Length: 124
Image 1 (cartoon, helix red, strand yellow):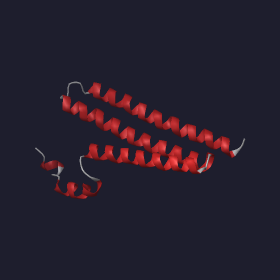
Image 2 (cartoon, rainbow, N blue to C red):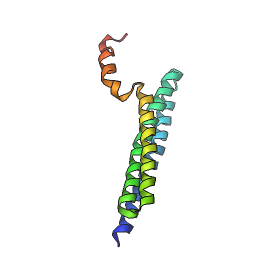
Image 3 (cartoon, rainbow, N blue to C red):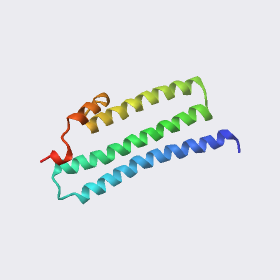
Image 4 (cartoon, rainbow, N blue to C red):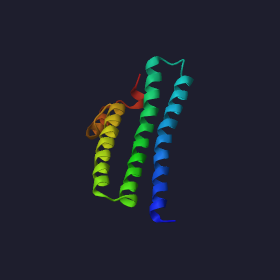
């Protein structure tokens, strides 16, 4: 079996894993949200959004890895390299946007936000 064939299978495995992570995250988020049906709607929404958002982030990272493997090992052409670059930029922007939205703070402001947040025992 040629290395190119093996790398195609590896790439497909990564792609399927990324998709399954996203689907599994949605199913888990929905199940946890249904379990918390007695909780206020805002809490259920944050639960759903948090679990699903993290699974989308992880799935995107796995899909970027699949694209990287395909471009480097399977078909290292200039067109594929340009497509990879565009995909990485788009997926990186999506990941960054999701993370900022979920955390509620810009990455370079996390340290400041952590310092100004009340300690768990100080919360009412």
